[in-house]
Length: 411
Image 1 (spheres, rainbow, N blue to C red):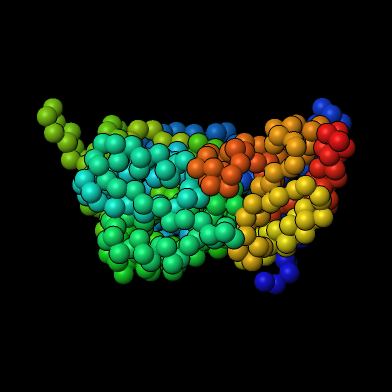
Image 2: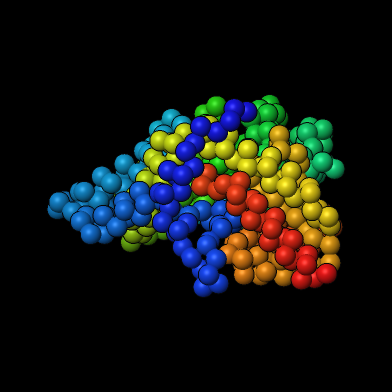
């Protein structure tokens, strides 16, 4: 992979929070972007300008503000569609987050099409958001869940997957990039094999869409779920991409305003896609911020973002390997995103995170909404440092110095 062409100094200047000095007197070192990314001034300004100058409800009014707001809301949908290369903006449905996007598929397509005994294939590395909706469906409908194991070197087990496909599954739902291991799964090949077996695919893109070039048409994904807040956008909004023929065949998710074409006392006719899945007044300002985030990243170039993060991944793995008593979970840098989840001999992850915080370093500690994966790794929790386009090698060095402080405190 080529060296990053990014000017990190200029990029960091776009993120006001990175200049913050914490109460400890330390300058913020933000290494928790896998949980949520920081926001550039372009996103902050887009939402601020909407509330200052354009605020009105959408799709319902003919006055100037309503028409402006509607145009901005739909422009953002097009920006998001362009970012993932959807064939039409209508294939992008606004949701609250990746979790709701997955649940939308589970409550609409799955309940309309699956019956007892039908097989859904997941993986052992899934976030709870891509486990619990299917567990609920299993309890309700008696569908059967099967899991692709993680190999000893923390990769998607393709041989086991090929065997599971012989069960003639109806759906393959998998993470594109693990939020714990950083493993980047071979999504295009997984999808190709699924389609050969007659299954549909749902890709959890919460970690991949913000960090990698993602082209849903090239992948041939049937569904893709992702969130704005992990890709420098606002919280409270996400998206579900779906192929148009599938979306048109699916029943509505929620009932109420804007998802209907006509309503009578005893019946209704659903609106067209995507509006039949967007009941009620939506997160308008957040949608505009979502579009601004997509435009910001597209302007920088996702190839450049991915190249920078690959450099960061190589460097952090190299530096952590120098520290005695540290075990990092995940594959080699070649197959890994910019995530380093680790355990430290004799020290609980929460203690590691707390001491690092005293040094101004923000990391995550816990099971990261992936308890089964941690059980598979033989640990209850890990400390996770994660990186994005605005992080530097100097911040990796600060992390390493902080870990040495932890070691000194705990002897």
